[in-house]
Image (cartoon, rainbow over all chains, first blue to last red; front, side, top):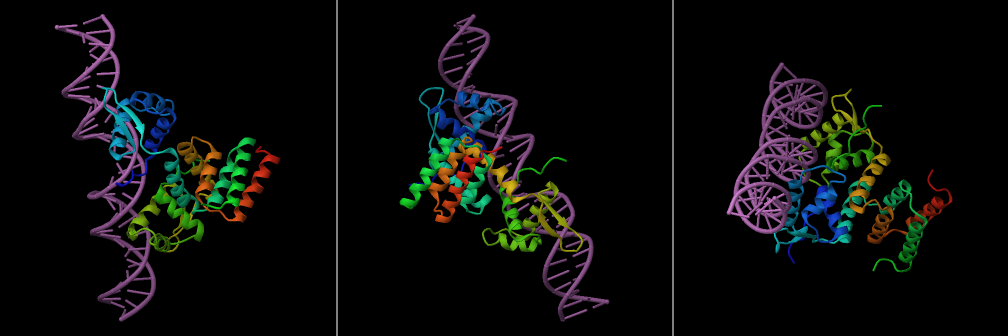
Length: 129
Length: 129
DNA sequence: TTTTGATTACGAAATATTTCGTAGATAAAA
DNA sequence: TTTTATCTACGAAATATTTCGTAATCAAAA
């Protein structure tokens, strides 16, 4: 296969998150979602999405005049890639320390905690495939 | 107090990690540590550290000709700040999902897993104030 | 003393990222 | 048909980040 798309920048990631949540979308929709938090012009969003298309982070259907964009990278893969990098630069590679920091700083529901326990159990039973 | 130092960039974070690990250090030492992974010139490291001093990320002792730099932000606080941001942009704020992704991708020792279990138990007993 | 080596200061180039204005095309409304 | 609104393309400005060369200074070595 050809080279995989590069790491998304922070702005690009915001757009990816919207595409993951909404599925194939127009620039207009993405821009309106984005506008909830940020305030930038429409053409700024457009340009970013065009750049993302050039990088291979998104694909687009140009059949109709109004193009439809969709994520070309999976949420899980991207999160994995970003997490690995973040883990190295911010936590020196220690997943346990990151996990503890994350759990310590945020309230998690009982359900979430149980889910995590279940995962811990599974990991001990069948360590990494 | 005055405004707190801004979020460190990725390069700055690499330097902070060295300072956290080694304590007060010269530019020379930091640069040599940095050179294990990267290859950039000495003055590049120097300039970065000067910028960090201007931003308040590090402080320095200028008594001697060779200045001694030390981190002016704590490891825990910085990790917390970066994690919160990362959590929002990459995981939409779901700590549980991040934790699961982190645990899923990395081998953790039994000791680490037990530590995390202990933490989960504590969290349920006395939920975050 | 003179030379050599290491250091800081600093400006500026190189690169990466984000933002926006303008032009041209198409479709919808009047 | 004419006007108005919406869209894409694209260049370029604005900003942020990283890199480096050069000059000045000081201290140690010769």
